Length: 103
Figure (cartoon, helix red, strand yellow):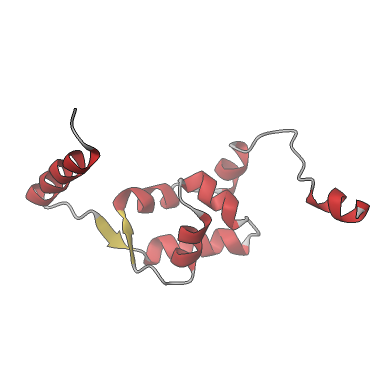
């Protein structure tokens, strides 16, 4: 059985030999995520849509991360409001407001 580390190294060396950078500038991703956050899309929802954690999304938006993986940049570039909300489960209403009112 081949380890994950070995697979990563082989893929890294292939990308390097082909001249493909694994990391790209985070600025386009930061701008796109900032636009969506300004449209009141929750950070956790953005994370679910891109496959990243909420903390990673937060770091990209606030400029802490200056580079992101190419796959992340591609995922963020493909985000739209329609695409984000069409993947959400239907019929679910967050219970937080009701719980607060009951308390």
